[in-house]
Image (cartoon, rainbow, N blue to C red):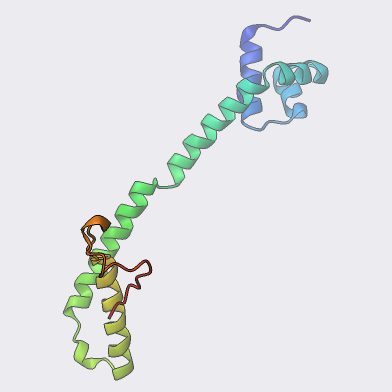
Length: 137
């Protein structure tokens, strides 16, 4: 029995949605061997359509990375505004030490390395040493 292109296209769409062969047999009035043959023949179309549908669902229900980062940034601004209103004088000594350590670390990360370099050929021979240790205070 010959089936029209419309039935085959409907099969591809329904199979991409995850329909079983039993359900497709009833819906399309097509034998299981024919459905299996179509599945083999149109496997890439089915997989691509399934991927497109999953991507659309993911886009609908999950925020993009940019949206998530923007939302987190907004929350951070709100928290920082609340922190500016707080009186650090109410913190315990250990809490103040922890806060100071955290602030130092953040400043170090924000400013990065501030080491200066000069070309080796400009270092006087008596001042040049193969092994130099970087000592930080």
